[in-house]
Image 1 (tube, rainbow, N blue to C red):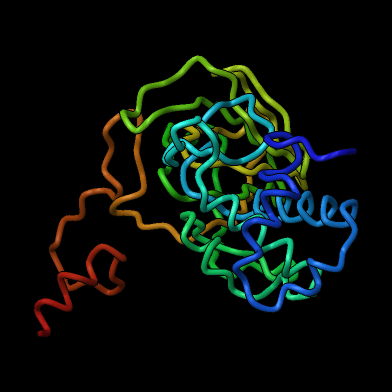
Image 2: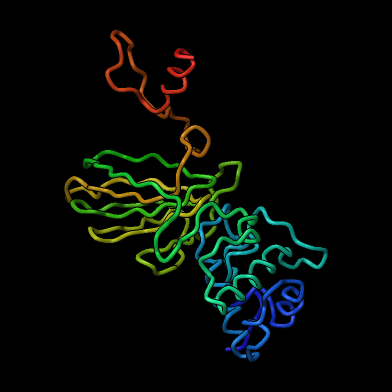
Length: 267
């Protein structure tokens, strides 16, 4: 399939040629046929779109991950130059077998994590056990992307909405990735996650969940980008991050929020 900008590539071969003319050591690009250059550009675009990116798509129905809701358009409404440069440089590195090297052009796009040969550079993992009747309140993250895995036990019922910075619930369709399959669900629609299944939750995606009644205690795994509890959690209804504690004896184990106060006391 030929290159279609906005559908399978961020730039044309001619645009990539113009960008790479100012780069050193581009023989692996210069000696390729137009067809191979197109293949490299499409592969580079896919590589960029699989990265952990800040924000969300500018339009829900756009094919590619860029533009994002924070990126800047040029006067013609085209994708900003940094994305085009990153695509050209990634294409060069693919042809030169250097696609796992650090790329400053891509790093400037707001990427918060990168996969190297299938291993995430920046991630955290935790296990959550939830009983029937317990509820995870509706919330979203501005930056964190997470994979939720039903490790066993009860079925998990998710309710999902899109949102903006203001935190309001939107009635637009929500894009999710379930076991590698991307599709859309209606706002507020229940999504069932059975044992062994997983789902990717993107930034600006409100989510709450419960265990389906009658299916037993659930064991949930979360593999996600590193998260700052103090700045990256937005609950639909105001709620304390941790319960109030009656400090009637010295702490045996500190909560993560208590360490800064302890450090101040020590210093």
